[in-house]
Image (cartoon, rainbow, N blue to C red; front, side):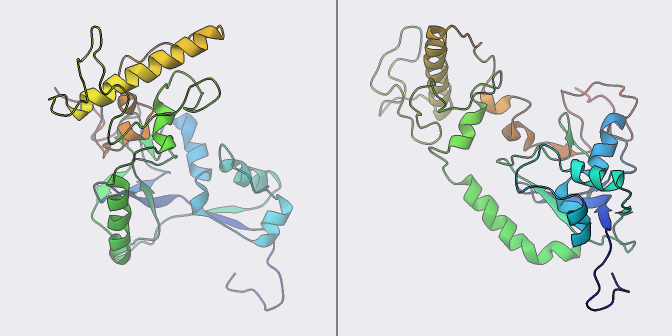
Length: 281
């Protein structure tokens, strides 16, 4: 690009970051991940990680014209880079500058992320590092975003996606019943006494905790949905754990820490490097 002449188009060419920083918004912790060398990435996943993550792409217009992609959501971004390479386009892998703690891009992750992030089991890939100076000026914006995320989220439908991780159905889909307020003030069973449950849960003056209220409302929602699906000849099992503790939920992933293994990992993984041994009790 530096040798390009005015008025002359660049040929098909692309570059792809092989290394970047990670930012955990709730804790404001930074990590650094090198896809080429990180030992926690399974061999079967390394290539898709290396050529995936669309935020790390740079490409010329002629490259896009050679392998155009529609303006729709893809399951994986790596298909675009793979398509370019299949057509003989050189894709250059780029690492971060060599100077100490240089920052170029930080891939952020928060509780409501739709992306799973660079996580294997309960462990964040990469190494924890100090905040690069390049990101200092944006941290006030990061704190503002996190503050807004912590505000009451009553009625937000995205939380309800995890009400039943055993199915692909979303809360509010046909046959699932009217949506109810899941977070914040509880309105499901106020004023009722329950057989085998919490008598008067949620009523003013009782000692029922907010967690008990949420769990009871979840149970009611599950029973309602199971009954409705049963009428249609379908059966869906109830949870054995709250939805936000399910290991596939971004809510469960939000506390994953760089280099710290968790309960979903298998001890003695041959891919493990330093800090990847079985967690001590």
